[in-house]
Image 1 (cartoon, helix red, strand yellow):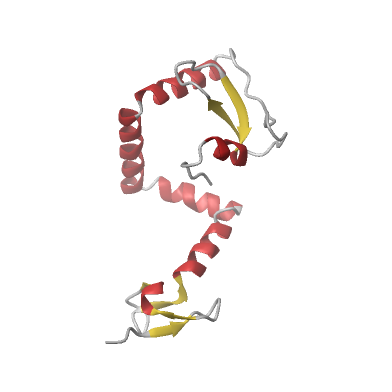
Image 2: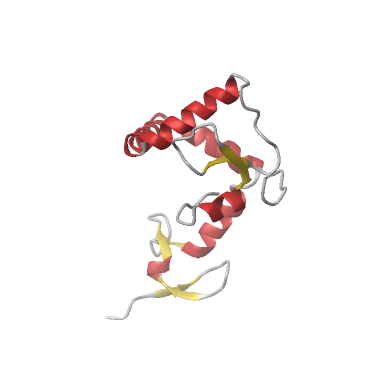
Length: 144
């Protein structure tokens, strides 16, 4: 039996229904925009202030906050050395023992600077990197 298809109103490609999210209020039971276009639209929206504000608001909902806390707790349990290094660094910054740098030490960018540990046993020994440069150090880690 042949799978049904429909045309995405955004990219105008004809795709199988499996490429569209199920939505019970739509006449055929699926959204009119394909999954790829929904994800692209959401990726762009999440970078706007309105998108960031709505995400913060969603994260405060009890069921979502609970899941975030559970995921965070599990990560700390699975990565005790990393968690301890992050905690020690955070406290050193709060106490003024370490000053957070505002420039990436690799490319000089001033956008979203993160601390990178080459060795988690040396909690206060970090280099400061922007998200793209930090991502190159952690090729299996996906960051926004």
